[in-house]
Amino acid sequence: MVHPPAQTRTALEEATHRFVEAWGNMASAWGISRTMAQVYALLYASHEPLDTDHIMAELDISRGNANINLRKLIEWELVRKVEVADPHTRKEHFVAEKDVWALTTRVIRERSEKELKPVAAYLTEVGAQLSERANGRLTPEEDEFKRNLEAMSSFLRLFNSLTERLLPLLENRNQKQLETILKLLPTGKS
Image (cartoon, rainbow, N blue to C red; front, side, top):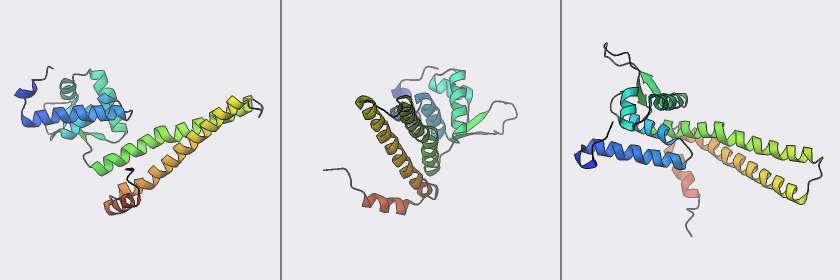
């Protein structure tokens, strides 16, 4: 579907378009699929459930691309299928999780479980295998590389520990406690 030029869109259509674009750009910077983020953003902005055909047309993506990204979003519990009260349609309809606290918690948990923990464990394993293959006698270059791997793995574990401690505050919507923690942290400004 060819989208109308910005000047012919309604204010809501233009705002939705800009939101979907911005969400896609932001997600790409975080290492999340641009299309997955745009599908989520489109559903988030919609006041009614959308079917796959509508999503495909709005984002100008293939059915396969739409289905893959909808499945991932459902897996992450950011989107769910819903029934619509139209006896003439058998199409599946979808809605997005619109609670920002739940959204943030799920994304952080997903990224931690699928990325931070496995990468930290893998880096530790690579370092151990390096030592094993060298029979404990590492060259200076190998030793430096192993130390670098250990430092990266240690940092990832520390960062993951921080996120795990923040998750209960997010799950419980404890804004006051989060604000208190933020006040204790330096701003990073010189």
